[in-house]
Length: 446
Image (tube, rainbow, N blue to C red; front, side, top):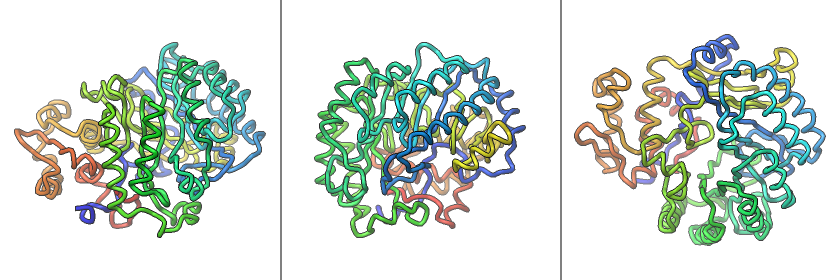
């Protein structure tokens, strides 16, 4: 079954996926989508592209440098973009902010406080909300958490990836294990309401046995959430991954074993398996909303704020507003040049048609909740489900035959094993994938 289903596929942080974005999408189309949006709440994503060191596995958009003054120039351009975009959202309340990268904590404390103040001065930021930032534990002082608290953050996500030293050396990401424990302890002292740990399985020299040891150390950390990502080895796309030898990587069977034992270990310790790569404690909002059927998914993964539009700021960031997606310039020089010329950095995007909106609802329902009531979808979207998805349901038959999916009383239910292959199952409803699959533009599912 591993061989049968180990083909390439998207992660469905959006539908249509970013591969469908094109540069014919204009500023005028974005402004129309903002005007027509029914939302009055906003989630802000701010991309900080800088990293002091290159992690060989990384496929993120980043700039490797040790010169912190480069961030001063970047913040100046971010300020120009914020001043241009913020008035378009004057009637919105910002209830969620996330800084990602790159490495947001590459910034100095002064730069972090400057940028945070800039955001608060230009947007209507709610006193109570989800304000999170990604933290690299390697090159910061413990006092950085005090700065983040002062800046208004109440959630942190720490990139650990693996506690095994051999694995860390192989991916050029050596770190002090005790410092990570000190960071977690300090975060709790300061009153951060949520801590997340990022791990990656499938890295060079990992085995199910070594990754099990990492999982035990993570349980000692006792985070509120975990993100356990599947390493996507795409050396043809990401040059740094060419430093990783194919022969050092785990087999698909070993990777599936790592995922399987991770799910067993974490659920056995009381965490809820949200899906794909997310776990949360049962009293966490992710778990509560999933149990209530109200979980959402966007470019930041599983999230709690379905009613929010998402505005991306900074190089390569993606916005999801009303019926459109819009992405900024991917590289830093064109980003600067676009802001100088236009005041914004829009590069490409897409407007959703009626079929896109219907399929987005179906895919999000499946990937967030692992079940779907056809009658409810019909009522919500005014369609006949079996007629509209006749071809898609035929593609789903192989999963039904393998007992990964069940359809009874017009309800689609994904089995526990099927959840491991939820990307494959969602592909059945993705009309764009059928062409992209021939071109192998996605990472393998396992």
